[in-house]
Amino acid sequence: MVLLAAVVLSSCTTSILDVVKDRLPPPHEVEGGYKFSYFAPSSRYVTLAGNFNNWGGTLVGRYDPTIGIMTDEDGDGVWVIVVPLPSGRYQYKFVLDGGVVWELDPNNPDTDFEGGFENSLVIVPQNIQYEPAIITGTMIGTTDDLPGERAKRDEAAEAAAQEMVEVSFEYENDSAGEVYIAGTFNDWDPSVLRFEKGDDGIFRVTLELAPGKYEYKFVVDGTWVEDPANPDTMDDPYGGKNSVLTVE
Image 1 (cartoon, rainbow, N blue to C red):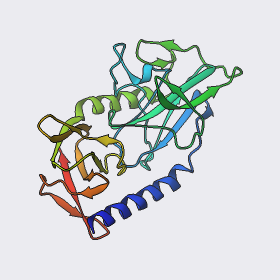
Image 2: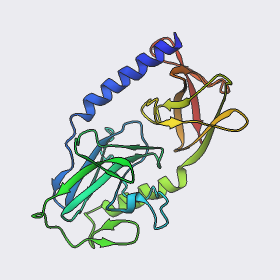
Image 3: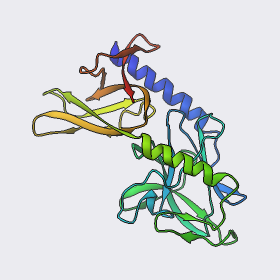
């Protein structure tokens, strides 16, 4: 019954998200640059990372959640950013909640590969002319920001840097082969956040989450189960229960 409820929940959630995602346009030219959009109603922070901003990283290759910050101005779960890209070919991904999940653009069928990874691809034609771009070592921009955008990015960057909390999960099951975690923090995707099995036989995974309340389950060899170490649960709409985590 738990497995059936979890599968139905995942299926319904995916169906609803697909409908909303399909209404968004692929990256396109607007005033000031190219506009990127992504639907992620469960995320607290979303950034745009690509080969135009060192994949949202510092010079030493570490992901930085303060680079490429997208905004959800209307609170409808649609995150947007306008980037002044010069003509050329650019690969990119959307990064959720401080690097927890990296996603292809579901509204852009064009992809390419870099370093063995498949990424979404946008091609800016030769006739596109923006203000001269500058490289600051970690991000691409222009000498003049769009009105109000700098303040929004600074506020979101400060919140992202201060609020992300490392949360560790453990699961012990001698007969388990593969274990994943899925929940409201990653749109209930059962195939992304994988546990690593230690020499002591215990499965572990560490996530960076913003403060808030999250529902989740472990996916053990394809079977959805509650976290046996967490007594806090919540009824789902299908007769089952989800484990509940509160990050402070």
